[in-house]
Image 1 (cartoon, one colour):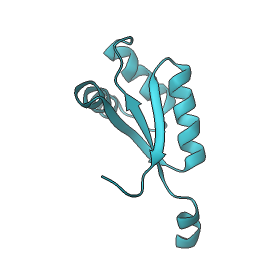
Image 2 (image 1 turned 60 degrees about the vertical axis):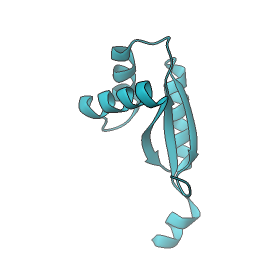
Image 3 (image 1 turned 90 degrees about the vertical axis):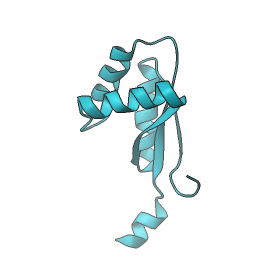
Image 4 (image 1 turned 180 degrees about the vertical axis):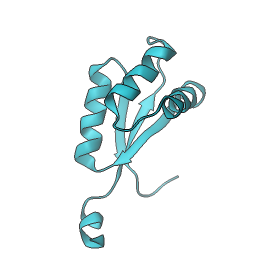
Length: 88
């Protein structure tokens, strides 16, 4: 199992702060788009993005990360993905 995981490195889905969307809307979108997202987690992610300019939403496989990123963007949020390995 470990070999298959190494072949598919994890990716981070990153939410970027924006001044266009209301905080409540961002929380709603996170809960709608990300499987298993709770209100508390969504609020924490939204707050972190607001304060720090960005926040990690979820770490998952690259195909999943691309799907989540596309869904977030489709709902008007600013999002990107990046490899989870390396860096801080």
